[in-house]
Image 1 (cartoon, rainbow, N blue to C red):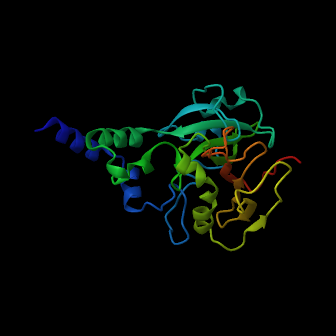
Image 2 (cartoon, one colour; image 1 turned 120 degrees about the horizontal axis):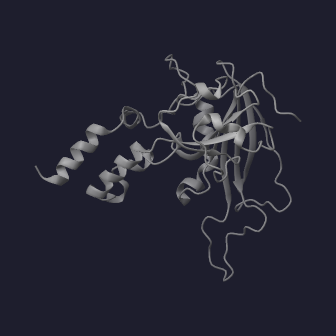
Image 3 (cartoon, helix red, strand yellow; image 1 turned 45 degrees about the horizontal axis):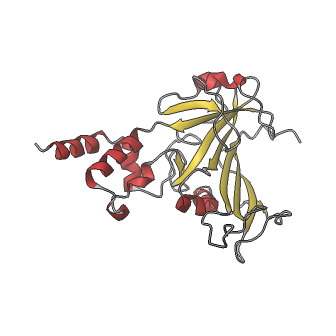
Length: 261
């Protein structure tokens, strides 16, 4: 058998069930129960608020580190139980642990691309790359209290992602609002701060909150505008792609916990 064909067959057979399931339903949000879905599910994949650090799943996760509120991972950790090695999150007072999904799906997808080539994206394999929520690359973390109980799961769109992903990051709220019901959200639309400006005539700045049927408090944020110093042009006056701030943020909170004011 041709070695290239053998590699393809091996990769296809070895694709994780989650990858194949998402291929059949690309709009699905892994671990999120949709309105018409009665199957039991955790808060996000197997992660759940209310679990202790030692109860949190290990299989399927790697690259444990201290989190930085959607930013670059900091000190490396062995697993969830090392949370107290991290500095407290300034906004919440909790210990934030960064984590990534197991990269088996990405590894196999890239293997197929090496065999076939990108073919103008017709293989549709980019959806399997990295840690994602509803197709958006995210920085994922879990926040623990002093007793080691998970009080929040946080997903912030990854500012290191390709430009196309980053341009649409503020749209993360759309599939999540659909998943948890479009009604009942308490939304605020703060004005742009000093130095912030629209992109042309367009800007988005919103924060929405809702208690969902599972008893969780969901918080969604969407941002799309230019920050201070961003103009869309370089020093020579040429267009500067990516010179804007686009971000989506999703936090799942235990209903009993509220960050200190």
